Image (cartoon, rainbow, N blue to C red; front, side, top):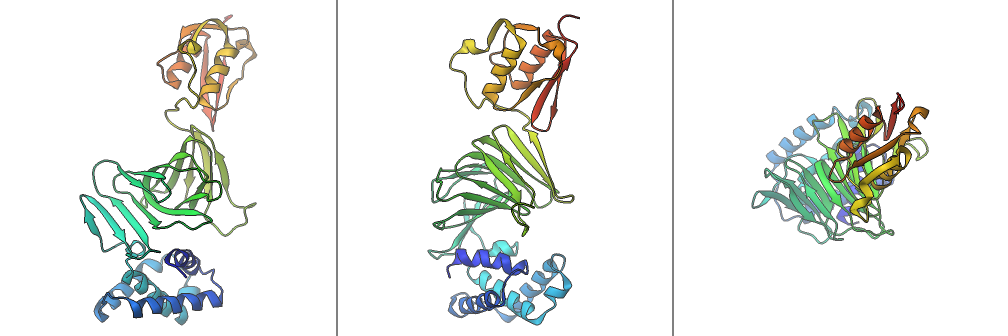
Length: 336
């Protein structure tokens, strides 16, 4: 078993979902790491680590599970083994090698993992093995394998990052952020998930992503949603709900071929709205029949989406509001 496979098995182990054979596999493998490691861990250090581990785990595990002898001994040995191989991310106090102001963690093996924490005041770019780019925001950490598996590309994120993922339909890209999983084939999006926050946020710039709960429920029963450009979701970790919204400042998904595309002269309102809807990639609904005969004249170039809508609505005596990921336009119309 390589380090990457062990990572996935460890997550099952800590969640109490391992079979007896998998439990034994973890114990044997972690003990082997301790025996073959070149890094010395003193008895005092082991005891200090054990105390810190149990202080953090007692709030997350059910008493019936973590009080069992096999779990206590196995988890301690397993975590100590991980420490020897440099997996400090699980304990929150990694041994770091400094590169400028960026803290990085490397297991040192061909099947190891890498942790990058941005300790600077600005964004930091990380290029993954497959060519995908990650723009890591300050105080954010990403954890990923040196070499992705043949079936999937998986990274762990704490904090906020922008992902520009290389397309590979045969190897989907997964971002794990606590209670949410974001799955893509190739697209660009932002994930925000700080440990201190009560919610996780995912917003899409290009392409589509699938966002769903990191739970053992079946695919049919767990919360999930498909996001398109200019859409985002917020996941409330307390009430376990996914709330779809538009991003604060939507951008054009499909650039108009000509500048004249946003210059209108006595153009039916429905056509103006259809043009806006087309380039921004989300639905805009005219709710009031009184607006149907209205026309619009004006130049909407160089304006943000909300400025465009405010100008159009003001000219036809209307207002707009956002409900979920759809904009609705209503009003008395231009005849009044």
